[in-house]
Structure formats: structure tokens, C-alpha cells
Image (tube, rainbow, N blue to C red):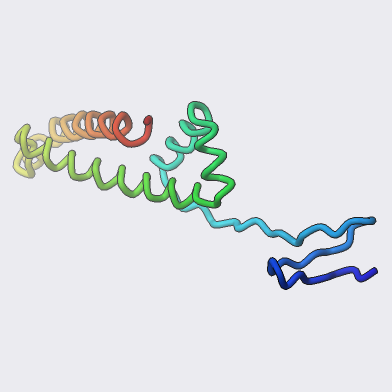
Length: 124
């Protein structure tokens, strides 16, 4: 019996292991590039949506999904921070006059924006 065979009907190569030919399959290992929000989404899917997580993992779409969620979340946080800072009057002038006040206000704005994005994008 041959050690390696190729089946033209399905395009797969097989290797002989004992008495059986097993397909030569390789896992497509993409380098994960997602950030904070992608990691949070992954953890949420694992714990609360295991079927969805397994589906994305098995179809090879998990990393692309996490990258997309991370990019969308970062973009929304940035937009919301600008809008909230503008609405609350947190400007460069405030930064020049009282840096500590500006930092405190921006930290509060960022926390609020992240909380909204987490509820709307990550945890659903």
C-alpha cells in the first residue's frame, strides 16, 4: 500500500496510518491581532455564547470577527469621546489652565464611552 495518496475527486491528500488513510489537514493559524475589545468579546463568547464561539472557531472566522469587533469598538469609543468632551466643554483651553481637571474629565468621559460600547458591541 502506498504511504501517500491524492484523491482528485475532492482534492485532498491522504497519508497511511496503520490500516487507514487519514486526510492531511492543516489548521489555518492566523496571528491574532485584536486588542482589548477583541479579547473581551472572545471571553464573552466563550462564557455566554459557546455555540457561537465554536461555530466561529470551526469555520475559521473567529479571528476576523474579533478584529472587526475590536476595530469597530475602538472607533466608536474615539467618536463618543470627542462628542462627549465637546458637549461637556472639555477643551484644550481647560487642558492649558488646569491639567488635572482635564485629565479627570477625560478619564470619566473615556470610562462612560467604554461602558456604552461594551454594552452595545461586546456583550450581546
